[in-house]
Amino acid sequence: MHFRTLERIFIEERIYKMIEQCKTNDAVIAAVHDGFKPFRRQLVRELAGADVERLLAVRIRRISLFDINNTARR
Image 1 (cartoon, rainbow, N blue to C red):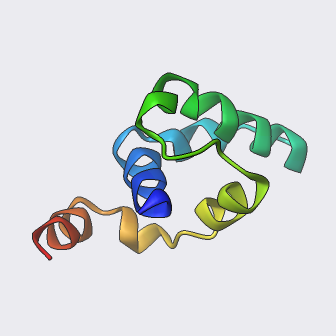
Image 2 (image 1 turned 90 degrees about the vertical axis):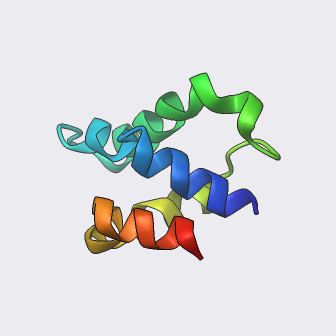
């Protein structure tokens, strides 16, 4: 449930867009953490390093509106 919420926020709020201009891995990780700050109350627990790594591994295809809508219907 936790990761599903993270993934939904990551995609719907376009947090992935925040990492496009990052030049280091540390900057990428910081950008993801910063992107989730407004949504902390929606999370089951704090965002962990493993959560960030898993989010960064999300395939771009899954970010399409078509795939989001299909996942929501399941």
